[in-house]
Image (cartoon, rainbow, N blue to C red; front, side, top):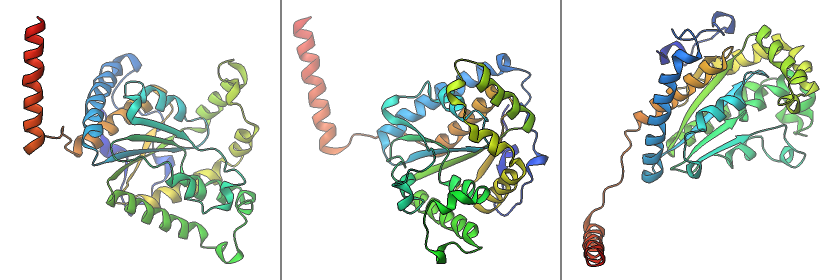
Length: 293
């Protein structure tokens, strides 16, 4: 059984990633044993998505952040496979373009926030703007910010801005589910090696992955600060074990179902004049089918 409380970063806490088991599997011994639970959650998720699309009062934004090689792509692919593509989007945010760097750092992400009635996955997100340029200062220079914006408290300020942005989205019906996929350094080595050997994965290879791996400790520190400062009542972080791809997908599916259940979704009811028109149409069509039968 997947227990949500084991993953949540409580607002005001200061998590240390070394205290989280990256190989945790929630009592399941292997992928085969977990398959039934995963399938059950995916079926329920599809049913809840249908009501979400019909009701159009909320949206679900799923944010996946991690160190390179954690399996974000595959996790989204597995979980989204059973969703209605008409109400589901996945966005993969790469390094900002020169044009995007001329805008405020939230600009390109806000545009991708789902409209009410839809589910959107962010494969990386605006949280990259407090990780990448913090660990690699040359990336901050590419944004050509005025000097008064590049003070020593820039990361704290950005985290406050992100908290305010997420509160704004929540107030406007966007439910936010944030997952940090927690991968061990040894497992990352295995997965990066796969990208150099397996034909189906070679296209994912980037020399930047090894450059970032050499800054592992800096990335860990930046992510721990992110988790501590941006896990709020409106949008809590979940630290998900990522050494086993199948468990990462299982945890995401289960957390999405819990989020959607909590909305108490239902199909809209037809009332008043619309109900009378519907009944009249039903009777008309039934008479027509009776005559033709």
